[in-house]
Image 1 (tube, helix red, strand yellow):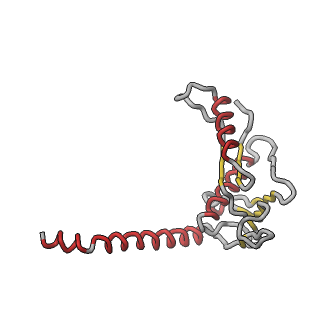
Image 2: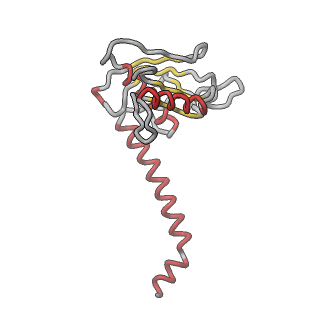
Image 3: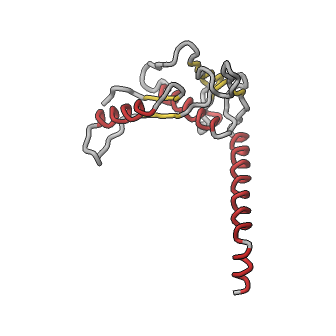
Amino acid sequence: RRLSKIVGDIAQKIREGIELTARIDYILARARYSKAVGGVSINHQRSTDGSAGLSESVVNLSNARHPVLGEKAVPINVSIGPDWHVLVITGPNTGGKTLAMKTVGLLALLYQSGIRIPVDEESTLPVFDGIYADVGDSQSIEYAVSRFGAHMQNVIDILSVAGRRSLVLLDELGTS
């Protein structure tokens, strides 16, 4: 009883200590992961009013590598914007199109999570207000729709929430 009372009296301090420990652990985990993938710090883009990350959504990734593949990753260069906002990747099967798209999406998510990404230092990314993807040919058994129908429903859902500052990744649009 005495021990329970002592713990009860300092319960708030214990909760604060756990929260601070979790924050420190999160920061250290991001730093360790950044180092493990060979990540670098890239500059925030600036808009004309000087606010960070809200420029014209220019994506410029130089020698970007998919972090999961490590040394096996083939570096890619991707540029989108400022005068255009759509990039279509075409080519034969097994040409790396999906991998390139996933690399851009994953690096954008890592960057926005405060993790250094495996690219050259001159690379730039904006801060997106949303990152949305429809990859592959999903099928929804729950709603008894075809693969194409499920794919199109995902696209409709994405388009209903995506805005001018969103990154939308669509893989094999119109298949199935």
